[in-house]
Image 1 (cartoon, helix red, strand yellow):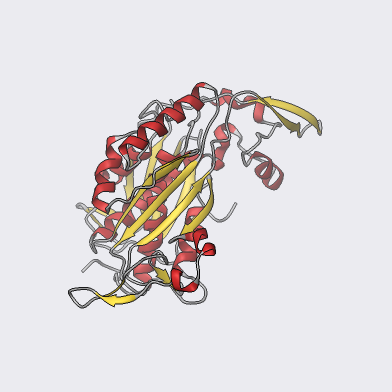
Image 2 (cartoon, rainbow, N blue to C red):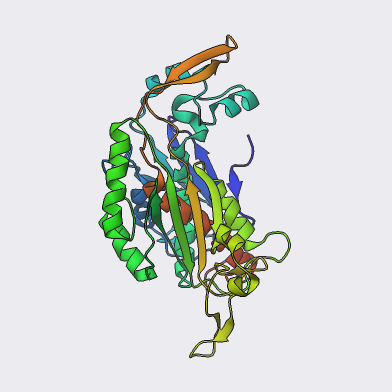
Length: 366
């Protein structure tokens, strides 16, 4: 299987299985001289790890990172950075009935038919747990972008049909999402969201939602005007996350309801003489390139496909209609934990484009 690597210069290769011995990532192309510790990566992994609240899967994984290479005396040395997480709480027996019975809503059928030799335990390489590799790569790229005051923050704006419509500053988002399990900025709505998730969990069901990602202080000029557009690369990175079924840039599909006069962002100068736009319908990207405004993205996250009850499928061995009842431990809603993965995915893209555009020297942090 190919396609386990992302990036052109800042490259991240992820590896491992949901129920294998370990998962991890190798980051190649990170400049030397970047201050980086195990704790920098651990902090990001802690935000996505399971078992942290009653609205996540009860799988008990501490997700303690081990750095195998690429760091010398507290700084990157220009060689590949490899970090792993060892699995500790696998229950592969819960998946014995999946060998020949693909789960509806999962990638089992496609994996089985394409590769034939498919490790179905926990969904194998198709499990959401493999996003540990994303987060490791994202943690390194986040540290790199911090040197240039570039920040990425993701927060939940909708769970099922419960929406948060208030507007918040980036500082408010950063502060409020740490105060609730859902990672929603609107604290009153967050409680309604959590109640809805718990209601569906009690019923053995699941829900999806919407996550907004804001990337701030991105310099003008990242991306290319034809292929390798910045919004194209960001959209691909986000769609590469298994549960994501849609991506919006700026006001996204709402643009279809506007006229040109309503859509266009007027260009002006701020008090310091910098070029800005008075609105940001474009979401910080025009002509495939960053325009200096905050980059605004939204992703639609589908409900967790692992739900209780008997579902129809096909027995691939006997090639006959069959049924399946899913066991195991699953998130009733992926949105709270996917925020960290979405931040990581975007950070990897921005870091790669910063190097490609010459904002970061490819060999060393100066």
